[in-house]
Image (cartoon, rainbow, N blue to C red; front, side):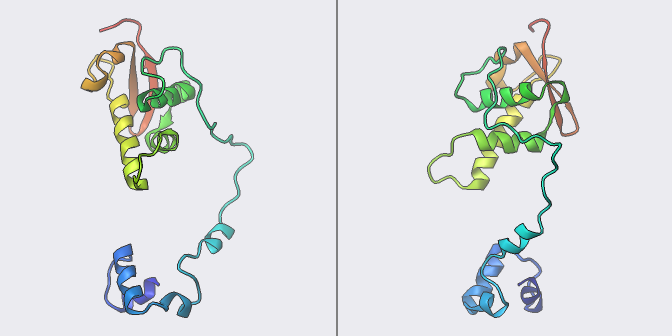
Length: 162
């Protein structure tokens, strides 16, 4: 399909361009020898999971130091960070896990749902060692801060409150 788009002068293979070609020629997918999506071919070439890696738990245990309301996204984000302990977690993986745990709003797209998770991670990761943090969690962040190195996040508990 990419070759068809390029042959017709399209530089991008985005969904909008694919839809234009499909509108002009509805049976283009069959002519090219496949259905609309060829996920079976991709699944067959996927790498098998390494036996040494553990699968992430479906839920994370509630941290005893978690200052957030139990059912909130902030609490889930804090619990994920606490679960990973000294090893910490990459920001992208934290966003993915939080997105998986957060309830979806009615009619919300995947992109919007992930964006909400990203914003929640940003707020939790805003607490700094010097006591500054996002205004939404300023009081709760008296007990913790998030150490950041590039995109790696580690939860740290404070010895004293600011």
